[in-house]
Length: 303
Length: 97
Image 1 (tube, each protein chain N blue to C red):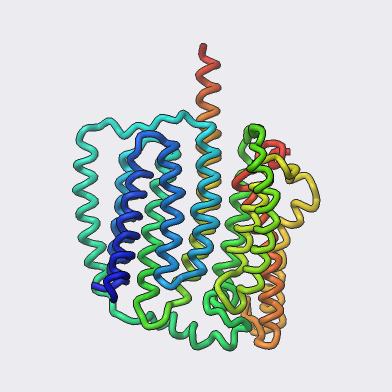
Image 2: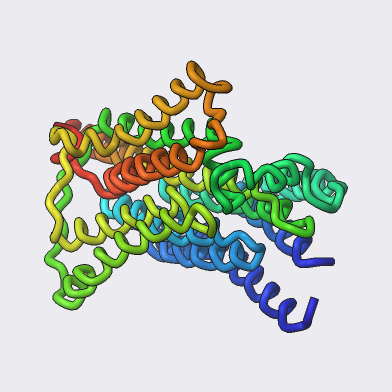
């Protein structure tokens, strides 16, 4: 590895550790949240460095963007003072426990053989039969479609759980004119980019989750500056777009189970069309669900 | 040492840093940040392991993409739960006076 690479990787590693320490130990919670958002962006660079552009896209949109909005809006309802635990012996004891854990984990991980695991090689070999060309999309939507189905259901469950809580009515301060102008430009752009990522996901990094997260970010931006109306649960269209992803996914699973080779085993001739259908439906659901998970208030979910 | 080992070690450190912060902090938001930092460490270990061969292991990467979405959903629910708890506690206190 060249010296330049070492310098770059070393700087990234130092940044990750420094930002994580800032997020965990800075006394102001607001500062901690900002450190955490910056950590998400640097992690996105690390993913790109490790040859995982799919993850870099997802991390920038979900890890840094949506989680950041969540944490910042949660700060509004919490006292902004952070205290560390008061017991004097706790930091030392935790330190010792963590050192022991570190030794155990290093021992466990360092002995692993070099080279790719067998399951990864099998997945790479089977990509041509999956209906899409990009290996990560093939794994997500074909080989391990089970995981993805359950993941879509987890998002739905989180949203349903949120409905059981009494949420406050959110009021946002009037947006700054420049912010308004920017969001008028950026929100349609995020929709366009989201659809592009969905389409490109078949043969390049991208796919339903990255696309859904980007569209959710656009919706949230419009919501925060007061340009978009609420998305109330009581409206049929909102419920439909939340449920369409899990529904189509389950229908496809049942159809392949009763007519074809088995639960979510797509027939090769149909797999491209099926994957596209599932991806479009899942993207719609993920976009609306994530936007509601992050930015909804009592008018939207409690009624 | 190679790039893979550097980021593998970084992932371990990040995980443990998150655990340390989780044990030492008392505030809901800080604890959720700590859990997410640990999660980032786990993802880093998985992605480093995915990149140890000649080509990148797509199964590990797909698992991490899934993990990211599940993490944000769980965090969203936990944060709202925390806010609801704070509101309930403060309205209880007002009721006492």
